[in-house]
Image (cartoon, rainbow, N blue to C red; front, top):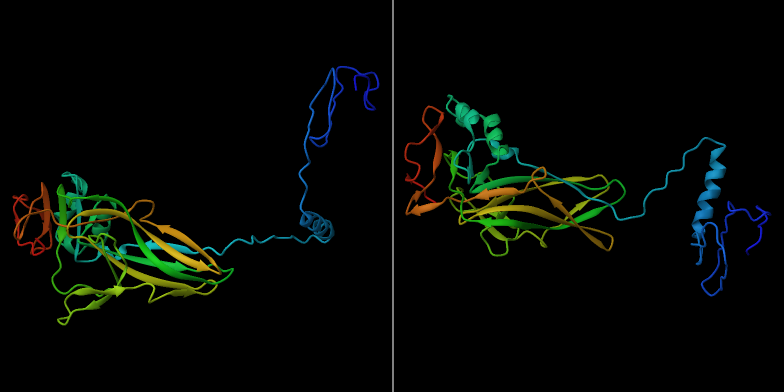
Length: 305
């Protein structure tokens, strides 16, 4: 091995030795130029030769061979929060400067209480929904096969006392909107519940777990929608939703949030019976402005407190 090789009979310093074999072989050398590999060449699976043959056959025809992945079908889930931007609406923050001078000026204009675009801008500026947040989950099945949605759960990221820095509120004037499912975040283990109306038709109440009594089958490319009303009274919560789906025997989890941020809901920071306390408060007035209250630390008439 110290002499020349077929490619370099003279045995010059530019020669390169390359040895392939099993670890059971003994290798002994005085001078080695290049690399020595001791081990087994990774065997290509048999299907590799089938693919190679197909590529050769198709090359002359100009056809394109597309290999589809054989993995489980994927579920796509998106969240729509636009239902929260219609009257009534309210958003709270730990920051007393919320929602900022530009939005405060817009709130002072007539019609602000009914301005859904303004409500949207207040929400996306960092506010947590007051008491309730409506989340419309749009479920879309893969085009490669059917999946079945088997569960939707809350994933709590943060629990805090109710946010007391600032509140912007255009309160409800009647019954609650109808709901499909309810998620009570104050519960120790929040579970998605079916929603029913009370006898007066003014309020929604939980009527038992929505899953597993229900499942949501999605055929190839099929869509469905689940409306979740998440509620909080005793605290403030940052949370995501985990959607569980089954394809064949495999169960997968898809996490959905608010465009990369957690969903957020807060209750009132109660300071006494019927009273809440904030450092800054904007409240809807009879002239449809949402004006700053002079005594936010003594906000009376709050039925939730």
